[in-house]
Image (tube, rainbow, N blue to C red; front, side):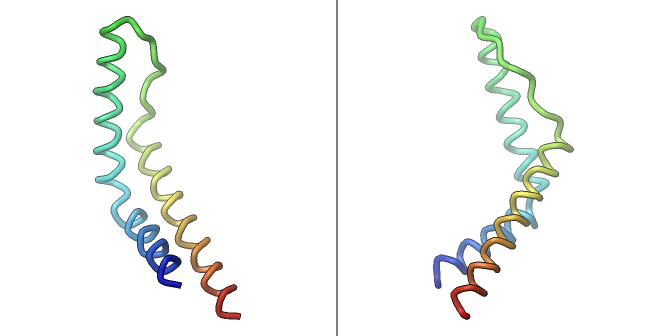
Length: 76
């Protein structure tokens, strides 16, 4: 039960802090893609910050809802 509550908290934290998290990871991705392209390796472009923010928010909410359902199922 402790693991489910921890996952619920992580999902809520990801949904709460989705914007700075997505901005940080997007900036790191841009750096990696630029480094790979400078060495001749073609990688697709990085998605926009808006897409990344929506993605991280959706994943955080999905994890939180999934864990709420698991907690509810374990208590029944």
